Image (cartoon, rainbow, N blue to C red; front, side):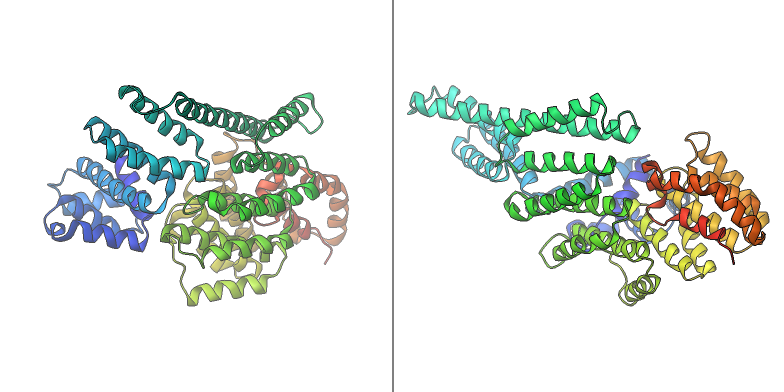
Length: 492
């Protein structure tokens, strides 16, 4: 739906981007339908899409909502593109290629060659081989139309060889990506195990590519280390994975000239490293990468990028305290945030924001403030987003535990049935979920010590199976629900 995409786009705008957009449209805001729609969405950002459509239709019945929304998306898109051209070399190169082609079409060759020269320089510095190859092909086509005027054969061959080299680098990069994506798919789907022939074939193919590839190519080195780290994490070799994380971090640090501007790729890599450390329970090792994240805030980056950095830093800091069972430090961090409100939309439906909501609820739960924990979960309807995000599933598990702690058994039965209707039909229930439902059904808390001891002995292998099962990490990485279940069986 167009209006839904428009709401998402407007919610993603930084303060600076909003201010520049409003300056751009100027006095026309008093009479244009698209500004009326923009201002209405801005003023009602906490409402859902259906409410916005309904209320806007009641207030402005003569405005064609779909066509106005489509025009506003295009207008905002053009505005944001201009921002990105000023900030990001990749956008600048694409813009330069378009300008080059335009000038060639109008026979303004001198200006076209000037733009083409800038693109080639940027592409070589950033090792953007695909864009470099396009630029070189445009140059060769131009030289052909001018009959290679004042050009020696050797100069022509040099340009051709440079173009061929960029094609080979692009091919190598594609092969690396193909193997990495194949490894991800097979490991995540459980199709291969560590010592299988399929796994060994993938490893040998990737190693062969790494040996053949240039060791000076940042992109190839990055993909090689990502491949290795992903393999070690998902096969349980955590010590080797930590070494690879360090090499990956050092690689980015020593190739700052190859960073995107802003460095979204580095942020994504750091998010991946921190999420992997969280998944395997290495919470104390997270602090080093949190310090690296924090350095981004001291640099001159666009506001949207900085807001993502702040949110990642906040989420993983809370995760580190929760994983270390340091509820006091987690609460102190949230109290600091309340004094200096976060620079992101806490009402946006985004995985990072949902994660922030979940972590806030976990902190309240750890302090046994069950009412506050539940209120954070149900705010803005986050708990009822169905299966749009895996985080919603985790939030609903936490909600079940909170309801159990509140001894609301009537509502608890309804929530369990609703949970099974939502998730059991599409996906298999996790072992942690099944054990949680059984624990609640048995009402372990009200049982005697002898019953608990006998039951805990029977479930010992089940708990060990959950802790050893890599698929269970997805459920337990935000908060160790398996440990909470085990605590219910402890003798009082």
